[in-house]
Amino acid sequence: MSDTPGRAAKTAVNPPAHTTPPARFSHGLRKGNLLQVAGQVGFLPTGPGRPPVPAGPTLREQTAQTLANVGAVLAEGGAGWEDVVMIRVYLTDTAHFAEFNALYDAHLAECLADGSAPPARTTVYVGLPAGLLVEIDALAVLD
Image 1 (spheres, rainbow, N blue to C red):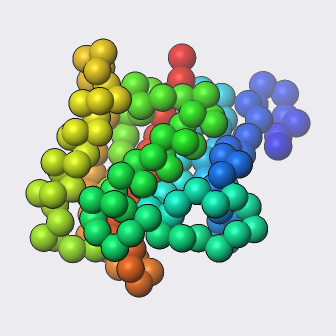
Image 2 (spheres, one colour):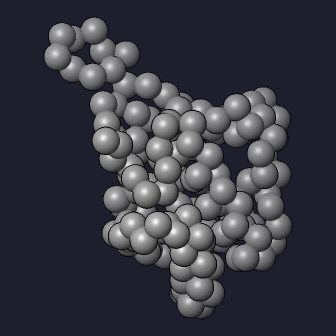
């Protein structure tokens, strides 16, 4: 935390049901009106100190849980999907792009039912730990 006058403090955002990160980072970080959500994957909520459990082997299961995990960090940090200005999606297989888009579009249609503009998005293809198919991070700006 910063004690420098005129500088906003950084606040870790770690939902109580999330597993402890595998390295020294926060699931989210809020500074002033910015909330950065760290890359979330499809682990079921289990709580600190418990081993992570994947939501399932399919892209559908992992995407649903990953989006729920992003949403939990947003909520814990005082934000919602309408505050998200940027999403980065990391997929392990280019063949998953169309299916992911359908799942993502359905999720945003539900979360942004008020007609809010969807966030900007970048999708990249990466290697993730064995069994993980998708990772998502987000940047939210709060009023």
